[in-house]
Length: 133
Image 1 (cartoon, helix red, strand yellow):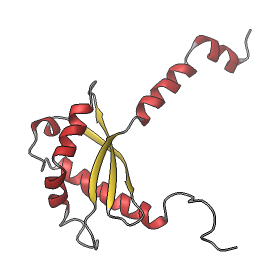
Image 2 (cartoon, one colour; image 1 turned 135 degrees about the vertical axis):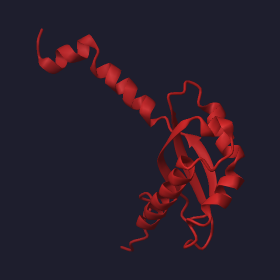
Image 3 (tube, one colour; image 1 turned 180 degrees about the vertical axis):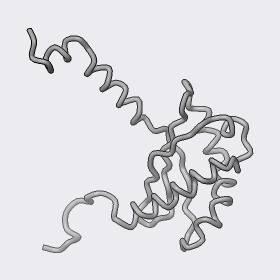
């Protein structure tokens, strides 16, 4: 059986490695405040993951603005400034053959963690976990 038969089993090691390199470079860029957008500058952003396409030409960046109730305007501001961000990332990613196109999306993983935590703290769940009747 060939190693390429069957369904795609997820990202390759190369995709994961390049995604981490892009994530680190993007984090440094945002920490230095190099994006001249007041909405982005005053918000603390957490970049949880950068998912690369198989050809490494597209990068989906999952961001989570911390301490913000409505994150849609921040994600929209990031997507509006992608050309500028991409240009500022170029020196940090000069070892790459192609500079990836960036697409920002809201990361909802932290919301899911909060929901699970609330469920585990519910009285009927905690009663079942302790085994008391």
